[in-house]
Length: 596
Image 1 (tube, rainbow, N blue to C red):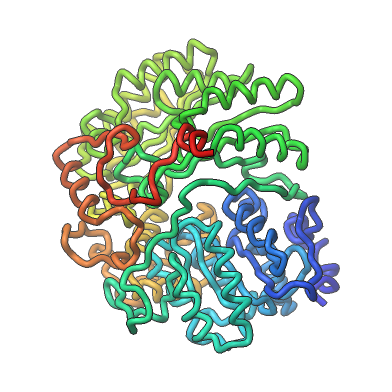
Image 2 (cartoon, one colour):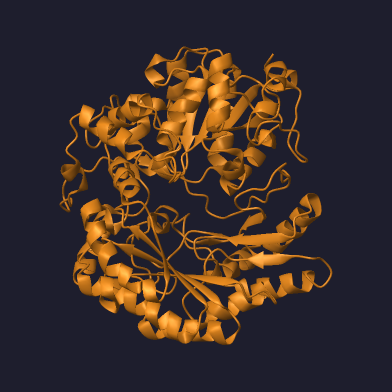
């Protein structure tokens, strides 16, 4: 029925290739031969979701299981969404065009907070009750994963269960439990899921701050699931029908980061560092080139230049390029000579643009945020880049950081002037508001409002003589910050915004602050109270989630930040953050080679 209805719609909408499926390397199974049917929802459009490596990994992991068939689901664009509602066409899977409500499980990827209203629209299109408490035994079990689950509360009422941490191993365990409990009451199935380390079942906890267990059957704190080593290689890669936002082969070379930037949530919630051996990376790349036809490879991690074998890896890839037409990219460039030379190697003859992230305009403030980059590093790196033929440079900065002054803002102007004087044809400043994130030292910090951003903007506009300036919408940052540190009561604002029509909030041209402002006003939320600094000992909405890093360590790091003291990279000296133990620790290339 769905396929028949699509025939009358696809010629009337934008980019119909988002919905048709049938791509090379997709997984098709006989529904009668599997015991569990899973939908993997990425709540954004096809070309965004198909660029997400995490989705591809979980798709591959689940489809490796003989009794499981995992299919993809993406958010329809606005024209398609309206058409589906007008024609009563339910949300469907890409592979088989099965109605999502007819699946056994729906996995939802939560990559950032501004996707929350999309999740509600997707459930509505799927004709699945928005709230977990309203679902019947016959409805799919709805499970969230992704970085947002480290503070699950602002979206917790939507989900039957939420996965905290790495997904590869836990996805298999969840699938097995759902197969074994098929036919049982929903409550019993959720109870079985709650026994898995890394699974949080919100309905088993009250809505206080932080939530407390309603029975002794569930843990007081949910431990983040950590894969001790990276072993999963993607065996099949789907070749999309259309150009993606990141239209290349993406290969994860390392997970975690030890640099300890105090604003960076990913740097704390993905600890420890686990390097994938270079031989496995190269094997995965060669396999991907063969089975997709792509000619560009992205080496992904939080800081790819920090992989201990990155130089030899790039050299091996250069040998491959002698026989195959390939180019290699690294997401961002380290602000030192090594980073620039690495960019030279992967860029080959191309000298388009380099991206650096100084984050702050003065050495004092870079010490506060633990961004261990000096003015000399910055100048040397830019001079080396220009001498090697690079003509454009992009610099990322944040404003509103703890202890920031006008002098720090004027430092950004000075850095843009230096970049221009070095001789770049185009210098671009990308400026965004700092957002305090859970499980970072700056989770305790104040978030500045849009008024402060306007003050900072007036100062930064002095850089127009030297640079093109891109400002991120501060009102988007405001809403993201409220959701990021919100509690379970914050969900009422998400629900209100959805009911007012908020959708695709992460798209700057579609974000509607008026809808969110009205949603917050309706529930009587005091925005200033949400943005305020937290004391080091007050209860936080995410204290029941144990990511491995001790809260006491985060508090100590915050105090060091206020004193302007830095912390060394923990690859060389353990900083006792709490993550490492007898089974989990930093794993470098040499460690894997020695044990294999």
